Length: 238
Image (cartoon, helix red, strand yellow):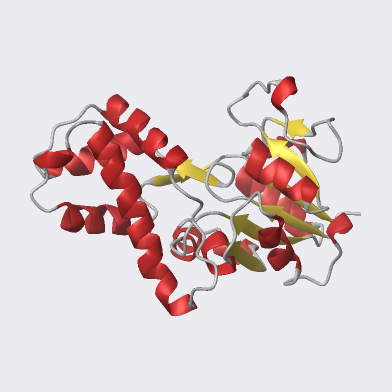
């Protein structure tokens, strides 16, 4: 019996309008830096994939926002370096501060159309809802700006826990906020490894929200309790 549903944030509840490359490129051009949106988007995901997990174990909460900012600044700087235009910035830290603040607003994001119907139905069924995400602390502002915050009893993020999905520690931290055992919790997210495998290995039920209809290489599946993958393309399965 599902009593609580955990949901991932970016890629599950909401996503970037257009692409990260488009947003980064638009801001860069306002600083006189010309770069292809497509090249920048590819460079961003290359940089993001090579970055260490965004988690700062043993860090005081008051210091986390600055560490988050520095983590993202390093990812962005590497993206522009890969795209070959980093040297064109007159003041990259100032540019990045503006870009970083932009992503704390509603403007660069859109809410997937299947999200509100699902949240409303689950709420009407008396199911507690929570967010478990590897996002940074701007997530609180983003959820509020997108009119999603009111649906969630708790929000658990990797930077505050000190561990990022698929590490079971973040799921354990989220469970501690709800009077519920893992077997009665369902986690839904768009990342097969971070969300589906992470939740299953933490003892939760899980559904992979495969919005992009990715194909799995069955020979390279991470070890999970069951190789039968529970998968949906949207939240319309409710």
